[in-house]
Image 1 (cartoon, rainbow over the protein chains, first blue to last red):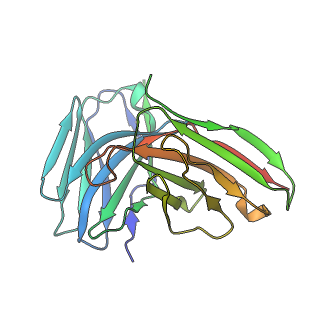
Image 2 (image 1 turned 60 degrees about the horizontal axis):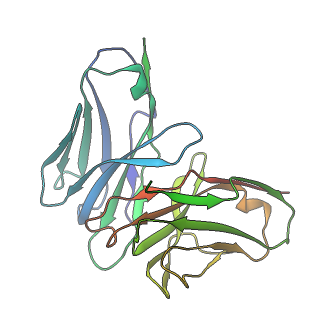
Length: 113
Length: 114
């Protein structure tokens, strides 16, 4: 059974710092991996989707990498801002016909002005 | 504006009183799904639907029903709610399923069962 882990559970950094969020998964037979952002009291917003054949995806100050063989993904945030404060979740879709996503429990990021 | 709309956003009910949480999307997406989010357990999938009249169980389907009679709507039905169904519920949709599609979420429905 696929398990997705995100460490640390919470992270606090000063504004302007570059930071990395980690996501690991136990079964490397994934189809893709998606990173989400969740603001308090809100739904999730998709940030980046990486297919299993890809190594990384970039959007603005965000860069997500995927190392399927080692079961790891990282989300790099450059020049962090207070507006980046949120909970970041990763989710993996397994191979085969199943249309299920398995989510990590998230990393709560606080960027201090 | 492209969106997934859930109603109600907040609901307090009592054990055994049937309720329905509605979900509607205006993006003509084939794929829709329901999740529940609980502290310490994260997001878990309840049911999903690949298209009209096609539904399948997620990881925690017990105590829930769904239907997909129209492409835009995917209601979540709790026939006899129990306190362990107190949770934050999210509906999501995607064009063409999870293989290629970004997942769009609703704002969430916070349900309390007394």
